[in-house]
Image 1 (cartoon, helix red, strand yellow):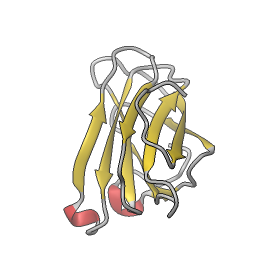
Image 2 (cartoon, helix red, strand yellow):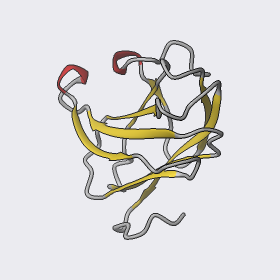
Image 3 (cartoon, rainbow, N blue to C red):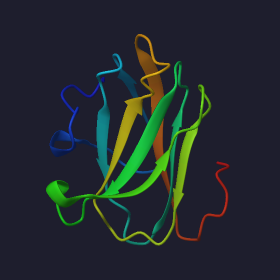
Length: 129
C-alpha cells in the first residue's frame, strides 16, 4: 500500500487514533498492517475501513505481548465495497495491529481506502460513526 513496505506485522505503520489515514492495496497478494495504541483515558474503539473500490477484509490483533505472539481479537468480512467495521471495548493501551487485505475472490487491481481508529471513553454499542 501507500505505506511502503508495511506488508507484514513486524513493519506495521504506526497510525494515530481519531484521524483518517488514506492507503491502498495493490493487488490480491498485497496486505497493509497498521499499529496503534489506545489513549490512556479511552479504552473503547471503532476501527473503520471506508471508501473501498473493491472488497477487502480486516482483522485486529492484540500485539501487547509482541508481534510474534499477537492474538486475533476480531475480524470483519462484509461483502462488496461496504465499510468494514470492528467495534471493540475495554482495550488496554496495546499496541494493536490492524491487517487490511483483499478478498481474493473479488479484488482486481488497486484498492484505495481510508482507515480510522475512533476511540471513546464510553462503551461503544453501535457501528455507526
